[in-house]
Image (cartoon, rainbow, N blue to C red; front, side, top):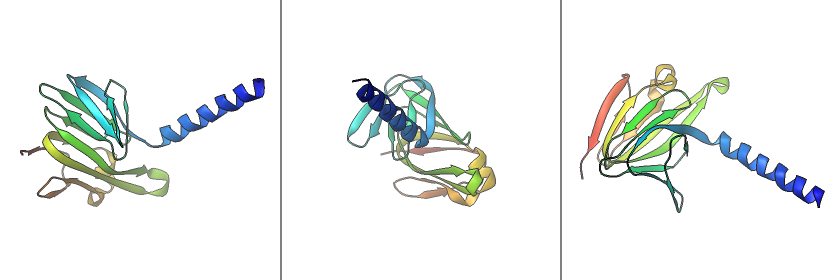
Length: 145
C-alpha cells in the first residue's frame, strides 16, 4: 500500500512539473468575468492562473485581465475581448524566441518584453483582417465585429 501511495505521489509531482514547463504567462490582474478556453474545457480565471500555449482568454462585459509572460511581455485585455496565445517561445539558453497572439475581438494593450527587444522579427499579433509586426514597445489594437 505504501509503495502504491508513493508511486501516485511521484506521478502527480511529475505531471505538475510537466505542466509547469508549458507555462507561458500568468494572470496578474483581473476584474469581472474572465474565462480560459483550454481545449474542450472552460476554466474560470483567477489571479495567478497559469496560461499555456493555445489558451483562449475571454473577457465579458465590464471585465478585464492583465497577463504577464515569462519574458515580461504584458498584455491587457479589455471588456468583451477574445485573445489566444498562438505561439510562444522564450528560451535564452538556445537563443529561441517567438511570440504570436491572435486577437479575435475586443481591445488589447501590448507592452513588449524581452522577446521584442531581442528578436522583434519574431513577434506578431493577428486580427481577423491583418497581421501586426511588432517594432515598438507599446500599442493598442481594437477589433470590432
